[in-house]
Image 1 (cartoon, rainbow, N blue to C red):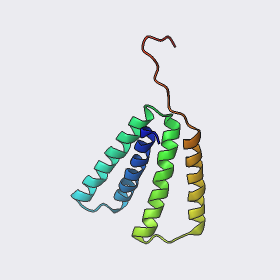
Image 2 (cartoon, rainbow, N blue to C red):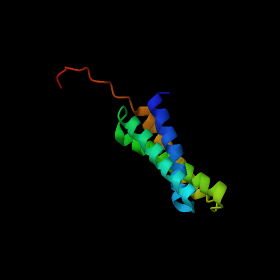
Image 3 (cartoon, one colour):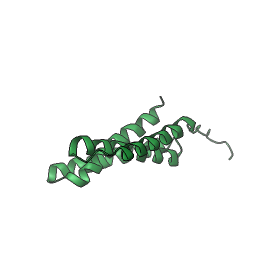
Length: 115
């Protein structure tokens, strides 16, 4: 797997933390953790977007973050399990995987080459 896609997956992992933090943060330390998660998440997404198509990076980032957030809310915070919601998340993830499979990394342009 390409290192830039690894950055997108790690960014989505941190997205789950900051989205949950926005709802559940209650003191300086939890807000600080939320802020750090936002920074890491967006930094990695921006770095990956420099080499991969931005639209695809964003779609994968949001799709994985959404799935992770729904999973975390259900498992850790007692959100009711809803089979329809899970099926829709699986459809979303199928689209995200499809986007990743059909997206090629941008080739660097050589310096001095005319466009």
